[in-house]
Amino acid sequence: MSHATVPDTHPPAQRGWYKRNEIAVTPLLFLAPAILFFAVYVIIPIAQSFWISLHEWDGLGEATWVGTANYERLLGIGDQNMDRKFETSFWNNIKWLVLYLLAIPAGLFIALFLNQTVRGIRIYKSLFFFPFVISQVVVGLVFSWFYLPREGLLNALIGLFGFGPVNILGDPSMATYGIIAAGLWPQTAYCMILYLTGLNAVDPEQVEAARLDGAKGWRMLWYVILPQLRPATFIAFVVTIIGALRSFDLISVMTNGGPFGSTRVLSFYMFEESLSEFGFRMGYGAAIAVILFILMLGFIAYFLWSMYQDEKGGR
Amino acid sequence: MFPTPIEKRSRAAQLSYQSLLPLALILWLLPLLAVANFSIKPESDFVNGNYWGLPSSFDLFANYGRVFFESNMPRYLLNSLLITIPTVIGAVALSAMAGFALGVYRFKGNLLIFFMFIAGNFVPFQILMVPVRDLTIDMNLYDTKTGLILFHIAFQTGFCTLFMRNFIRALPFPLIEAARVEGVAEWKIFWYVVLPLMKPALAALAVLIFTFIWNDYFWAVVLTQGPDAQPVTAGITEFNSQFRAAYHLMSAGSIVAALPPVAMFFLMQKHFIAGLTLGAVK
Image 1 (tube, chains in turn red, yellow):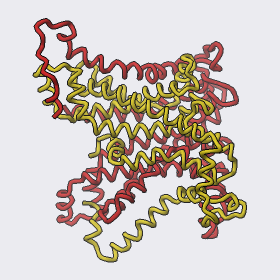
Image 2 (tube, chains in turn brown, red; image 1 turned 90 degrees about the vertical axis):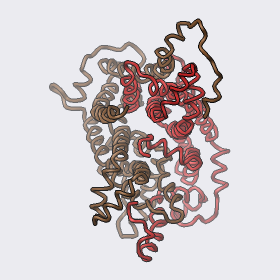
Image 3 (tube, helix red, strand yellow; image 1 turned 180 degrees about the vertical axis):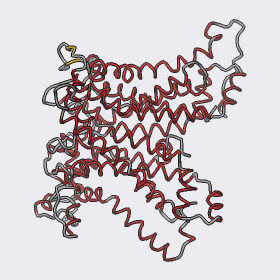
Image 4 (cartoon, helix red, strand yellow; image 1 turned 30 degrees about the vertical axis):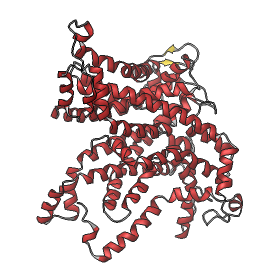
């Protein structure tokens, strides 16, 4: 053990202020740099965004106070219509949120399929996982080539069954689903690895006992295995929700919001309003970000509450 | 073990499982295999409409050679490396200290600070975008690697602290108490007692943060522009407009851009997975 190497330092007779308050002061010193960084780059900017969202600002000149006008315009309060781009983005976010959750059962399914001990299974597990390691930008490129009407492999495959070429990313009614499918690929891999590690920790005695009682197949999975996979499911749920609401890279790379703005989500629309070539509308963008933040806050509160319950159970 | 081990099933089941495995894998990686195939084809294949068949000649070296010698790709790769490595060191150092403080000491507000780190780690990037971009411009760090590194360190500290603190909590506390009884200074306890025990956590986080930062795209677009500072995820857009519609070169470029984290993963698999499961699933 390494503490054996610590030199023997008996406390000197005269103890300074630091020595006397060591236990109280040390944690503050150790926390200071992390808190400083985190406050400057994360905590304070959240408050600033709220503040900016109450202004009209091009990012350079003076910001003009407009109160809640940005929100009223977004949500269509008063005698104006809801911002149509905002409406599309919002519903697309809901689609992302719901469909992205498919990654959890899909990941569980693949994990169950791979939870064997045949030769070479470790390689298979890594290869199934590895879409998650690739950057979303590359995943986006890979899938946009996969979907190409002429050169894409997808159309070649469905052509074999006599269906005819579809231009998924060019069709406003399909493009969002095409992007979500691309996003599900790495996300499923992530959920799979969570469940594979979870399955490793499943208590074999319980499984054997259940088997003796005649449980098998679905009933075994539902009543014996899934309850033991609760921690894995919780993390899978957290990362999938966060991932769905953060979707930006894939949309930016695959369609850039198009066709006809049909694939925008809030995070993308916010970026577009604040920094696009159409001019910088920081106030309006910040208002969109605040709405996205509030949407996410519900989930964050739930996650924190669950973690807090665990903490209370612990030491 | 669940499902029933295949060895205990019939011979037919075993054989079908063995043959299903590679098939499922090929299906799963199909989009990627298509791109890999694109990247070793000569240009003539695309002209002749041979998109999915075998390459008519093996042009791996020619295509990848052009990626490395006729584009800005090497610069972008170097930028990525110069952004990623300092971030990994910074984030791991800050969070090891913060995790030690939160995991070992009892003081008022401990849990509150801990939850602040967790919550901050979950917020949408967009709520930070305008103020962080502004701050970076004010510090004269817009379009520099330093600007990107500082932000990444700060943001990743949230996730890393969550991980470190939980890891330290699981260490045997009597070890620390024993050192205290011996009169060892607190910072020495951190350095000589806790840190050596944290090696697995440090490795897991380092690998994970490397991948996260290498793959970051959003902040690269928000805080940098042009080949002086942009990492490869953002640079690939410029690369692709340079070789517009030359699918064999664009494919080779994306594979090169994706490779370092993939290599990292295959080399450090155990640590990587330990990090991903947040240590919560054993």
